[in-house]
Length: 309
Length: 157
Ligand SMILES: [Zn+2]
Image 1 (cartoon, each protein chain N blue to C red):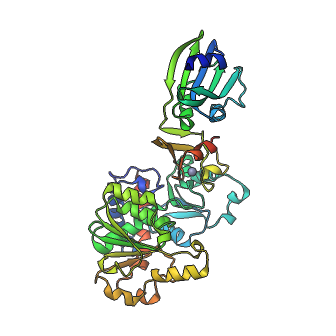
Image 2: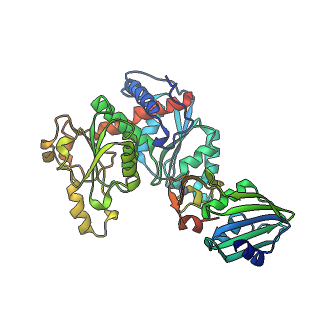
Image 3: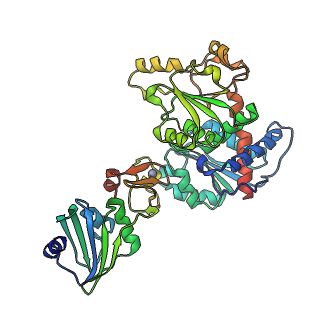
């Protein structure tokens, strides 16, 4: 089963091959009955997962802990740096070496870029990156891919619109890189000041991926199979006025969905603020809560594959 | 002409290393990159700046009594890709080397990203993959940020 998976650590989505991604998503699918409580699993009985969160991310942490506990394992760790020895000036390298002595695997969330890469060098147990500053967040991308496949039957052959802050949003960068490994078409929807960075655009051109860049959701919505929404942050704009003017055109409301395909699925990494109006939630097109729930089977699959390496 | 000038400005050495064709103004950085400034060494180290040559102005660095190793002069390439390294024995050049870019640059350059984990007090050397040759481009293997040109020479450790 895990013949395609040879990783000791999970640092970045770019480290995976298409086959490895498929292996993870296949296994995540098998995990679904366990998550739904229809099957009991004890694969991790007696095992300990350390969740070291140097910055808070409740959803990611809970989802890793749920994944571990669904397989009979236990968790130790901290949810913010105030409760850790890092606050007392200990290096990350030392914290990791100590935690590796207590636990069978480590999940790390850290505000500095490259933290997970560093941790992987000092740990003799598997390290999973749960977000490092503006850097990587590979398990978010895996659960996004899992969601697309689950909703659409495949990742390839979809036209995927990605909307919001495409310049600074690491989630959309990782997702775009991952999608470029499959046969998809992409449309990037953002204000001109928040377009996809040049490196990513160049990478897509090099790979011959079909894509276009547009300025508003409505002009492209009717073509899309998936609409991936993200938040545009107030800090990116000089004034409240500027922000409000721009942000409004990147809001999705129910009425707009009338011009979309019947089987359009709307995704969002959450938390959302007002970029998706609550009236969208009740439509069958809204899949963001399912998407969040998909974090559990995806992370279960990853834990299991790492344990077997 | 070039050879004659060299004889005037740079006295020949009996034994050691002459690094020639260093990009003008980069001589000090070459000294630093090779750790010849602070390190306790017996050698006499000298430098000539702004030397005329057929290819314009250049700097020259001379290290007496010490033969530099390949991995040492690979570092030079990061800031002066056209430099040459001459190993001298008994006043003769026994080996002449164009510097070559290494695949990875470890512990030579600091990452320009202040939020990179290598800029905190962690017990690791910086590590960059050399992703471009002309101009030299480095990608931090920790935070993925790319550096080039002045960013590199300004961040030499
Ligand atoms: Zn870096």
